[in-house]
Image (tube, rainbow, N blue to C red; front, side, top):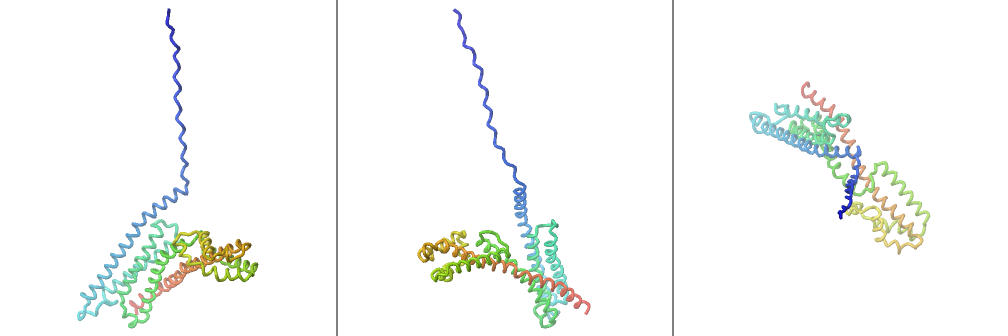
Length: 317
């Protein structure tokens, strides 16, 4: 008897690996934003370097003035630290150079095609060396200049006002945008805020005309405005606008104070009044952001020719 063998089974085909989901290519916008973020981080060192160089320059300025006041030009061998001493002339020339450095920001701001450092870095250079320029100008001439030479003293006052408005503008540009962003539901230009204010006020007047009942008018003109707190109070709590409206409605007990058929209208009037209060404060912040610029620009335009007159009168008259 012969043994029969079972036919050999063919090996099962190997399972194909599951296709990996393809990753979407990053959008050009995302790449651009990431590069911009990295560049912004790099400018931190540029800004720190600007302030460090300004600090070193300020130390040199104060050191030269101290040597003039207490060593080289000390009475009775000299007349003290004044603008017509060698150190005084040196400080005057340094002030002129620093004015050129400060003015370079305006050129950089206008020529956006220029790629040498970011505008924010130039802004820090503008501010830091502007403060040093003010220090050098005061030590160059001294507080006695206003009484001794009124024309040059007035120039010094205008120069210090120029630097003061620039420093104030820096503080405003740091503090105000944070407070503005805190109460914004969406970013709006000053013109957009004005348009929305007009629209809200018009709608409020239309609602009051359509609902002349004394209870509703008193609710809209007296109860609700008193219940709306400062917008920063809600901004610190990170409340969205609809949350603010709900809180005001609950605080004013609108459901009980207004008839049932007026609840939707009451909610709308509260919405308009809340929005109007927020827009009013936003408009104020926009005004603050712009208010110092014309003064600073006017003083800049005034000080440049006045600086030339000052130099000419000192050396030629």
